[in-house]
Image (cartoon, rainbow, N blue to C red; front, side):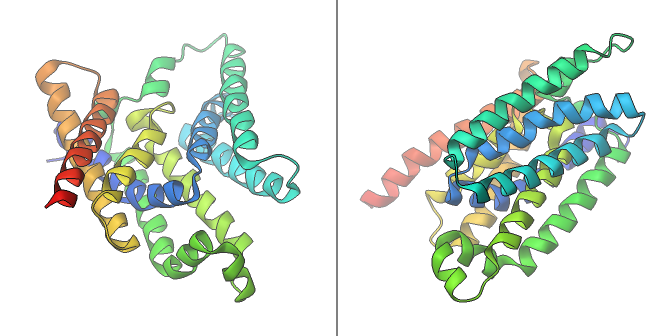
Length: 265
């Protein structure tokens, strides 16, 4: 079955959506959309480092994303700049540094469009192993720390007063996002991964009545987006990664209409 590239593409997208949905809920609740951009843009720098150091590119991307996550948490403690300003600076600086570093690799020919927008149809069984290993680890951590993460997200000051270690939890959340973005880069690319984090979570928010429901619905919306995007890409011969994001957008627009109807009923 894994010899079929479409099956591998769906399994890869579904694996990313399973973990991107719950993580995206925290991104929406914490209003940290720029954080996803900061990490994903830094992935390009990881690719350049991977080529320069001769290591696996996935490892290079993961190392750069983890380093960026730690840097963001550290700079947030300084409280000299608002978080959105800080993340905006790091997001665009990470992208620029990655492009400049790649420009120095004049002996290598890099498919930059593939890294920017992804190529889910080229996913291999090794990539599937990376994706599901990372997804299993991240989901296990989210389930184990769910109550504390939720408490620290919704009432950070109260959580701190109750003795919850807010800073390690924040670092844990950002590191899980770094692992997810590194695993998802090949599927939808560094410019589109943030969409897969945010749009399904925003779609689920219209219907969910509890945080747990929103996390599950976001994962389901992400999987439907992957299936719909691949189907649309196959039928209309469109790029797969952007097609998945367009499908996620259509689901979000549909949720706006259905949400309005449900409120009137």
